[in-house]
Image (cartoon, rainbow, N blue to C red; front, side, top):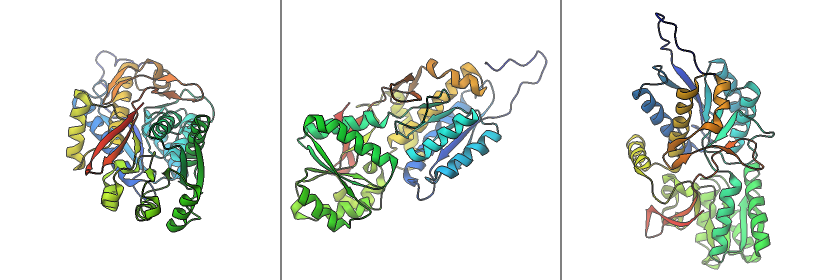
Length: 369
């Protein structure tokens, strides 16, 4: 339902409209990603305030640190719901976002997920959850197509226990096998970097994908592989996006270049995206990642819904299919995707990119999907 107008002669409501935000700001969360995500959320909130707020009411962000902990994040949803937030936004880690989605669904609180891509973010279809990041299955199939296009069909994945990594491995295997490719999984927790290199030689693979945390154990693995002459022709890849952030280059230098990863950007940003990117760079003191743009898009979508449909939680959830918002990376609309039980921005742009070996501070776009 829409928020009713104030009766004639009554004082208009000037109390803040609150959005709860969940962001990984401390370890073991991916702090660098969390900082970028929060910068995008905060910039968009400030812009909403500067353009009249929500029916004259200021928009306020209530931030909680998820720290990559699903239980902590679920408890934060309870706290935020009790504080009266209109919706919950954010989160980067898929296992955390899944816990947030489950709790938001149980409480009847809209959750617009910014960056987590796991297909099965919800166990059962729900009206309460939507997402601006593309589904993992779509992005990782595009990544697999890139590997095949470059003649890399024999793939090893260095992996750690996680539903996210396990799902990614399955997507790669299911997409590559019918096309003549293969995937062997190597346990990064059980193998030292040196032993991992030996296994890569034994399996005669053409690419190693890092389905592991960063900087540990990703950085030691990259150093070991780069230093092993037997693996000079091996492609190292990181579909989850570790090389997107400056910390990757700070840790690895030239060894971190030429590692293809997924990022969710168009080939060129339009005027809106370029303007937001410039303002985010000023806030962050460095080039913003696509994660920062996802944060800005998240709040901008919700602000549009709050202005057009009011602050009632049920009204927000009912409005997902009516979203038509210009985001930093293109027009955002939500639809139902087969096999995914939430409202999804289906056609978010997807690139495979890497850091340019000739200039590791810059990127090359290698493939688009």
